[in-house]
Length: 276
Ligand code: DGL
Image (cartoon, rainbow, N blue to C red; front, side):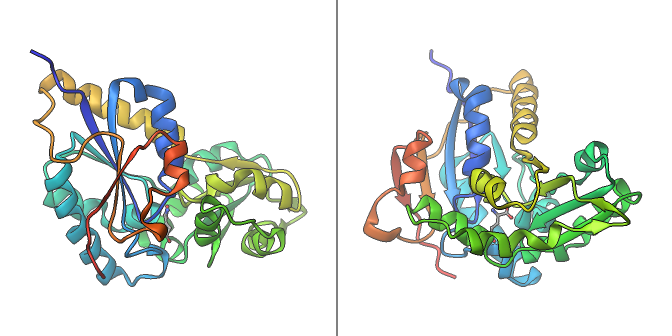
């Protein structure tokens, strides 16, 4: 009898979760099945009101969990995790791994005491984010900035468009400051789309900093949850969606699987039409 491999559902509003999928593939992709879901009909999440976004995430997640029957869901989206993780854990039995701004490691790493946090306009407004700062970085100067267009710039890059350095600089400049004679030395990438622009960000940054991409830590946490679950139960039956599928909630341009997903080892496209 063949035993099914454990199945991870990776979820984001768009392609940002690919930065996390990359880390999962690198760390333990050989032993785990991956299905990626992007709420492309709802993108960008950074502009939604909190009440409407919670409803949207629950609605999409109900359909996805039924179709995929995952053993673990990774919410590879800070904008969704900082808002809806508790609600999701109450509503569904499957374990969830969240992605929240890496403020704790940034506070441990800074030498100057000046930290930049780049995130979506939604994430910077969250109580969750404020609490992370008050708990772990109360002794630091934290420059928290809601970048209005950075996630969309990352989507355009993945779609093959050129990235304008001036646009990029305008998005990140507010976290590069001098405070009491000290400069920002650590910048948290508080949106999973941003590591996909890391090379370009390094080029336009006013000075070199440590960029914190939480993806490797999220992948480690996911591996831990699956190992723990595997020790106590068999993987489930599996839903109707096969591994290496990308599920989108709207039709992609050209009706094709977007190139960025193919490059990350995804081979099949499934559209689950969930209009906003
Ligand atoms: N990738 C998402 C995040 O980590 C958000 C992008 C968006 O939908 O605004 O926050």
